[in-house]
Length: 460
Picture 1: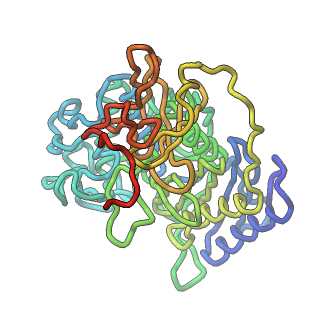
Picture 2: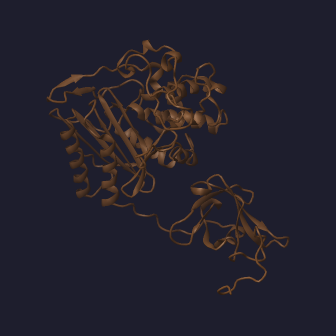
Picture 3: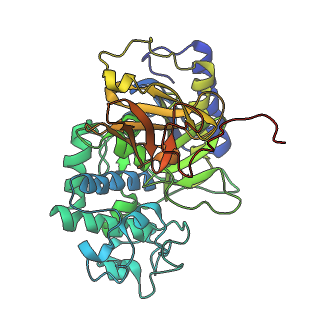
């Protein structure tokens, strides 16, 4: 089944339908739903079901498990952007008495705090939240499994701490913050802590027989910020589009880009995957995908976005195991990206230009390496190799004649043009690196000086 939205080519639609049909059949899922959006608009939805008749559509709710963590991370980044906390703050500064207070907020977001992966006691996803009424019950007597900050070790209790941090700093429940600060501004009306009809039921499929067993649907209590939410492919596609571009009502473009930036060391043998701030990052198939996966008894979820392609893909299934939803979502995105690549926006000249900045455009030299400074929108600039590989960064204008790096090697570093007394440009200073208009310009204060005899042929 597909929904006639913005048209994809018939061959593309069939390839998408074929992929989810294979996934549902081979994975033996009671049902599977999927969606693809391009530049923030749904372009395809599909579903497969074992039940005769009308299958689930883009408005049917499924549990999304740990994709909930990305919502929680957005709430934490909002607190940071409002100046209410710093990501480098130890948890103890804002949420004292947990027994894990030495861990920083950034380490909790990136799963580098060394905390246990799960709670002590019974399997928390399949047991009553009444067994864990306090953070002490969630963390246990020995909350740490690794030295703080040394490695990536996925931690569900870590996101419980972040949920409690949000409540402490914001002064409202995690659910209230979520609804008022993310769901309502983004119009995610079919996302919430409890299911609302129509919604799928969760099932376990016997590994060696085509029979089903219903899975319990527990309220997760304190663990809710780690995995409670129900949502739809339509809502998740909209949320993923926000994570790609930002929305000033919720979180800026710069902050969502920070979420998608690796913040945790990769493990040996896992170089294609990394973790940012509440987001997983995958490198492969010639593109970088960011998003998250999720699972709870009876449900599987996968969400990916490609900023470069302007695409997002979501796959949800109501079975405990069997369907590689993350792989399927990635393959759906790749199908569209390869069959119908993004059509670039028409080139347009800048609406206005500062002549003092225009003067800086063109080639510069770091020692003997040639780079080019190019003007970008809103007074920003880009600095990188004239051709080929090498360090390349974008810079945001600070409004005082300086720029701050947004990405790459120079992220966070300051770029400024140093002028002579007569107003002419001497050189560019970038984090103590000097860029001159000529290789080792003798008229610029090159560190170490320039040999007075200048350039020469083969030394004798």
